[in-house]
Image 1 (spheres, helix red, strand yellow):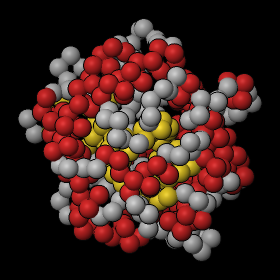
Image 2 (cartoon, helix red, strand yellow):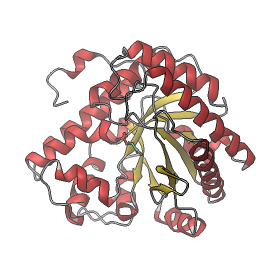
Image 3 (cartoon, protein in one colour):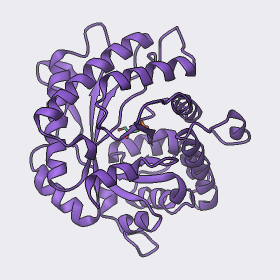
Length: 338
Ligand code: 13P
């Protein structure tokens, strides 16, 4: 399948992306919160249980994996990429090597992983991956993000994207403006505007075919410590406005990160955005915590009760699938673990 087709399939109406690419360090934090030991076996069981859920087929167009996971064999006999494909979804892979302190602006980060990337991409393609992810991180404060952070992270995202398309895969371009801090929603709008502009500037210089990419941005939201809370309507209006003004129309799909929103907030905000979406973008989810938090809790309660883990996951997958069409309703959450 050509990359433009893959990008559209990943974000097909009613579907979104499951971000299950937590690094070993991040999944350690998630497991610690539910008192589960961070062993390879436990990581495999939790993830294969999600990927083997009935909700995959209807609501999940793609799954982002971590290096360890894409190479694992399930206890069901199939490899992880085979299991994902069997459920009608596309395997993808996180290829960055993490956000590292940036020389010259030590409180900010630059995402690493370009060295040797061409060779790693070939290996991942052979393992079944058809799309990839690279996450750049921007922090908001009085002095940040710096121009250095905006420029260097955009440059890295563009070099990554060009290499990924050369390897016949779709790059997910993820510039994440963090929710941490007391800034208001308009500051988030302004910083996200600057970040997106610089990213698309660099993608153009690096001759990236935008029709074969997916954008994974943050929503336009006040900082988590901001006193002025915003309604879902305001978040939706400002997010859609920011995307329409700053994302070239050739980009086929936009799949948000959940970024620390609760499961229900993430569904509700995505739903509000799709209710007013008058753009040509397919707008959907690429959630990690927003899809997995309830399932993770069930895994903590009883690691062997696969049915409960899958029920929790199926519910979130369905809710977000509805939100990607603007058809989610608060009443549908009644009685759910979230
Ligand atoms: P969250 O949805 O938990 O923010 O994770 C998405 C992701 O992949 C961050 O890179």
